[in-house]
Length: 356
Image (cartoon, rainbow, N blue to C red; front, side):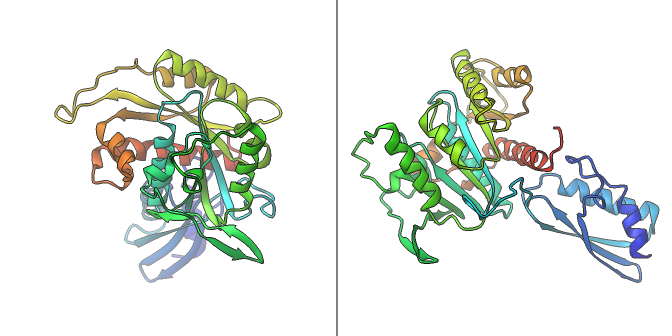
């Protein structure tokens, strides 16, 4: 066995999403051969890569088939999160991917989706932040159980920055941490835009693989401010199956396709897709209609990222500050894990410039 033979064998293994082989993509490193033992490391495009087990099996099979059927193959993984950011010296320089979670209307569970997406990505070892940009209706401080806490200031290179509060391994920042909950935020557009710019420039986000931005519903000042001032990797659109929500989701998709914004849509996720009672786990009741989000994704030719069921424990988890992804409800986690895997894939494909 030689390194050349190993690389030749591995050049037959494709990265499932990017459509090129691991050797061409420079994803193989640290090849070590000792008698019948061979080990190497695959550099993933993200720690949250959903396809790594498939790649591991394919690599082992390739070496057994093309090099040595008796070889003891050890496949290790590391990650270097891919990014499409060329200039990391400007806004949020330490953040590789900025993902905006949007919805056309309120009440579709956008904040629940954003919170559990962040937690699901972090579960795999990626560094994640969550910015609650819903100035008028902040909720992430409630969902993460940090109501009443106040962020501290820290000195970074001579500049005073706000330190996000860390909970469940996520860096969280919300206007709900800075104001009295009993007071309504009665601000005109310029004040809101100024607050958003502060969340970007005056918060010490540090180095992150992913920053998830929980956007306010609709299409307005905050969306324009963020899209024009922040290098957003892409947006994820949240909808529910009924026609009213879908009609508003269309406006959101249209907004991000406008020339002055031109932000890629990573995909659409359908929340509250069906109701499953705890006592009847195999039953599905399509209360708000069936597969409206999936049909719309096909209509606009954007990826459909998954369906999130209407489950009592998901709602309860957000209310008590224990999101479903950090609970013991393994069944309800499945839908979020599948959605996250599809979203992460979509981001990697966009970063690689591959037509998905």
